[in-house]
Length: 584
Ligand code: SIN
Image (cartoon, rainbow, N blue to C red; front, side, top):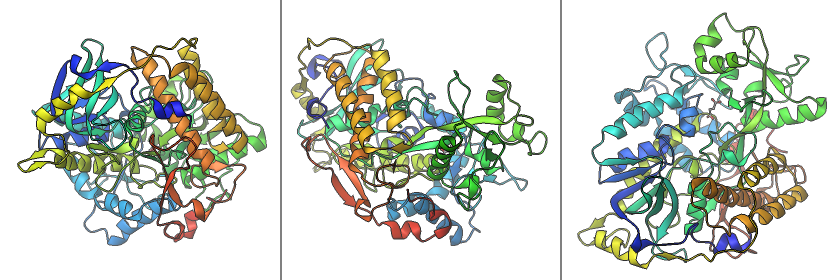
């Protein structure tokens, strides 16, 4: 990691006391499932401001198709819960925190019952209960869905209408959170809010006893991605600048099936399509996953994505296909209305045509390191959902566990943030109440000298960065090629991180440089292949790397990351069926 990434504390120069001041008890940044759920929980104990850089419903959650993995029925034996736990551990390749897996899987039922009581419209089976689908890595049917393939949209509709009705929550949309404010720059202070920018109101300081980051992932760091344009890793980058530890940054999940139409934007084709029985085939209509893994098309995502890439190298073809032509007439349109509509735009009818697909970056597994109460490593800062790394997903996330994590950790973060509020005998965050917060404001100053280095074309930096990340930090990585990426990022950093931008386009590119640099550092350091992280030059899984790697701005550039041991491969491998195929 280059020293400038470490030295730069804020993206812009400012004097906090000269800016408009806004106060709340809890500041939530991000409006996906985790942010919305966190805001609701925090509003039960204080005033909340929810900041989102676009519209409330422009998040990766809204684009989520598959569903929420959850074991619901009281009559389902504990075996059903145990099997969900085991599938999560198996997919995670030894890097999950078993206690977190247990906590999240067991919390599914109350969180889903709560959604149902708030009017969430899950698709129902013939008995009037939420219908259950199957996806990759799941041995049982346990994925709840809504609107066929519009689960995320319905989750956002349900939660956001409740958020809008909550008197204690104010929503600041189109408001870009630039940086967290801390009582000290040396990593041992408390987070006391954030500096934000709104196109109409300009820069503002929002003071809060607790701040929750729920800004989602950084899929936009890759040229091929299923993520919406907002996913630029802003929250992770700002937490790093504030001194919080980030973990497992090497792990980026690649979804096996994004629609591949040359020249068009990539679009997710849900794994539930394979869950309903679609095959993955090549141009000769050969089902190449059969024989590669016992679960064939429904193997965990890392296995399927890698197999597609290997098969393309072997055949010299540009993409593979989903074959759903054997589905009952009308079933595809009924079960997947959104995907059907998308395919129709390109003249593809799944009843008659093969669907061209390729893998794409889908989910950022690494992120802000949090404990089992959603606390980051710095006081006053919590994180939940895709921007965090809780240990649930390990080295490879099990399908449809992300909406579940957002619900569970969102509620947890919102509830736990109450511990930062002042008490009669003192206060949880050491901020000295609102007077203390504004006192802090006088201290916070950011000075950034003007740079006389030349300017690079921002659009070009963004697209070149995304291309090189896809080529060399994608599904299969290689030490020397990652070294090249490091040098390229260092070059772009030199000419981009020294500039002071005044709108989100510049700040997003700066944040993407941070995140890409950390993905690259973590992937270079992890000299093994595990889960989503495959290295051609280090093909074996190594037990000495069965650790979470933690990166912080406070470490010296030459230092190795701090390592937190994991429960390990034994838990993951107790099921030999889906455990195979993970070794490089
Ligand atoms: C999908 O529908 O395939 C995506 C679900 C997920 O990422 O969990």
